[in-house]
Amino acid sequence: MTLLAAATTVVPTQSTQQAIGYPSLFLLVLIGALVPVIPTGALVSSAAVVAFHQTAPFSLALVFVTASTAAFLGDATLYWLGRRGMGSKNGSRWLEAIRSRAPEDRLTQAQEKLAAHGVAVLVLSRLVPAGRLPVMLACLLATWPMRRFARGNLPACLAWAVTYQLIGILGGSLFSEPWEGVVAAVALTLVISVAPSVWRRVRSAR
Image 1 (tube, helix red, strand yellow):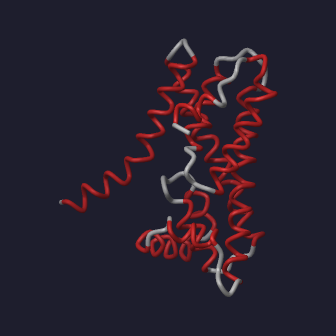
Image 2 (cartoon, one colour):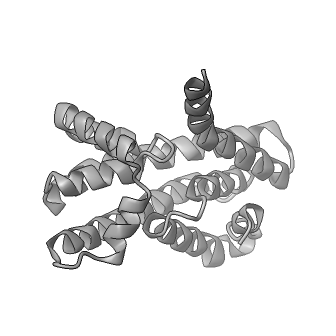
């Protein structure tokens, strides 16, 4: 599924928004939290663009509730699976998937920040590109109970949904056609996603 094709799954006509758009957004964000290959930020921004151009009341609020709930449930499920892997003799494929996406240097930084600042690091981790999984793994290695992780992850998911929804609203406000706003929102989220890694490479080259 290409990025633009994924985005269009949450850009239905207004008459079918509730029947197709919100369930599609929920499912894709949930899957993206479990298997981080779907550009969930771009999906939320794209859905916000469409909601911005609609006349239906509470469209933006429904996008926010749908995205934040799906992200929270996906993170909670992945953390629960990770905890099961930590307690298993042979681990689990879910725990291995988290480890594979948490480079050693990023994990070390996450552990140090988690020890110093606690839940605040978890809240910020969802706003930093590629920051969610290293911090989640740090929480697992620190043997945080599920309840403690959930308390920190809830505001993290709310802040994440608000941030990407604001990107979508910005894109929607700049263009009269929804598809133009979707393209702008997707492009902006891509820039935000790759900028930190590009900056690190530039610094390393210097």
